[in-house]
Amino acid sequence: MRTIALIAHDGKKADMVTFLRNNLTLFKRADIALVATGTTGGHVEQAGLTVQKVLSGPRGGDAQIAARLAVGEIDAVFFFRDPLDKHPHEPDIAMLMRLCDVHNIPLATNPATAELVFAGLLAE
Ligand SMILES: O=C(CO)COP(=O)(O)O
Image 1 (tube, rainbow, N blue to C red):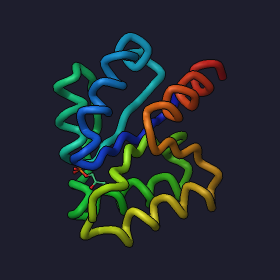
Image 2: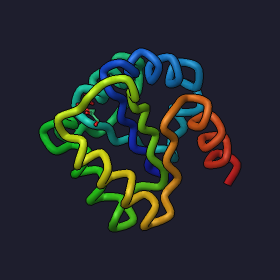
Image 3: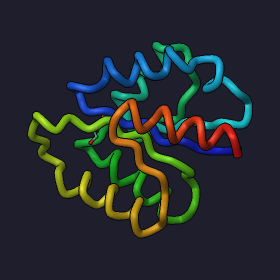
Image 4: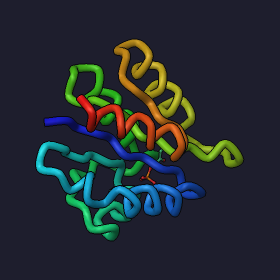
């Protein structure tokens, strides 16, 4: 079972939904579990997928996902960041990205990279 974390800033949520819809059949595979920050998770559900939702990002959701990946519970993070907007929880975002590097967890910050990482995960 592979677990993928899905996170998208508000300006990138539409991109996340498009990415999920384009890969819906593959995401529905029984051996892939999804976890998402709160608001992103709602969009994931609307796209037709089952997802475990944690808190919204600004309320600590990024930190929850970071804690889980630090103990080996998450295999990849698809985090569609909006580089053109400010975020009050920037320290949490930086922490999540840092822990991906500390623990060598694939981190895709845009759909093009996510396509490649997802294909790699499926090929394993
Ligand atoms: O803020 C986020 C990531 O930093 C995303 O949080 P939401 O999915 O709750 O909008």
